[in-house]
Image 1 (cartoon, helix red, strand yellow):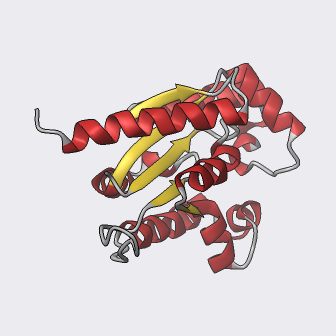
Image 2 (cartoon, one colour):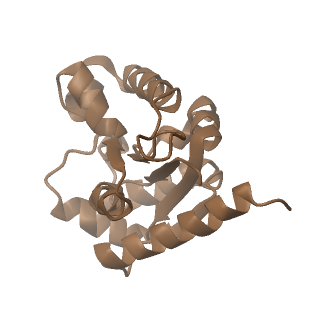
Length: 190
């Protein structure tokens, strides 16, 4: 089976909530790219954006993705590649190098949600979202704008799952099912 399940998608689509649950159910390690960036930088993402700009953040993201996708550890049970669930930030797939590296090591599952659902989730959250404050627009208008900008990048994913009307448990079921089906197609002869 493919050793990595990569969760990606727009902000507030459920990556951080469902990722640890999926990893627990599979008995795999969970790695959140944004958390690794925060640990390396010693500051929150919003502060990285404020202090150094988006280009610097994207470079850090590229470095973390490159590190994770070049992991040569072996699974202690099957001695194949080390299995992981990797959750990326919402803009990671926009970078073609990130997308190619992630596709090389696993199945990319893109979580989606309707713009109004994302806007409501973001407004309930205490997390600062630097990309939403650009342009002085309403949250919903900015969500729609960013979703449109990133649509081609998200289309590169192996599978898309709409999280709008799913509980975290239901979403985990869908993610694991889609991953299993797609991973099986990758290793079975045509």
